[in-house]
Length: 213
Image 1 (spheres, helix red, strand yellow):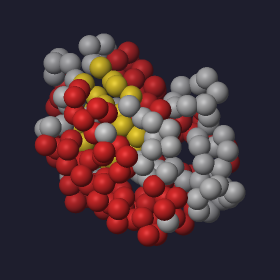
Image 2: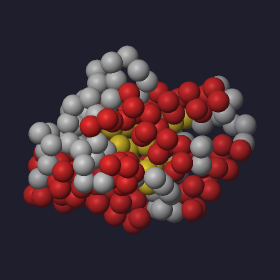
Image 3: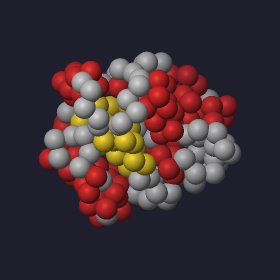
């Protein structure tokens, strides 16, 4: 499995910032998978693993990681509350992990998702932040959305990342590389939400994409 930044310039910029002693402010915006609610059953979410990697293992204790993920939210909802969730923190790094709830709108919602995600990424760029975009994880049968629809929304995230020069963390591709067409059941608490193992896998994808592995 390999998650790689689509834009070496963005990855190099983050590496440069991490090489300096000045503390960074990270904002992690997204849905329940970012928020890390319930489905880990007390284990760490991917965002908490990132917190541990940055502030403890990398020795950057003065960095601040702010998790503003909200269960059930979509890209348009986050965009509508972006001042509260993102900009007021004047972040140096903006992580956007959305698409799972958006995919409930099916193919008809792809354009709306692309527009909202693009606007959110532009907000980060206008703040002179490094922007990180995440594809949603792959899902199993019996989910309230479909595998093909989630795959289509993952494709939108890839397109927006390539267009705007964001770092891409391609969870969907990594999960498909691990499980192929089979359900990723070992990494799921139920057909949609990652369990503790799934969050560990997502964290590893984040570390690889950000050069923190």
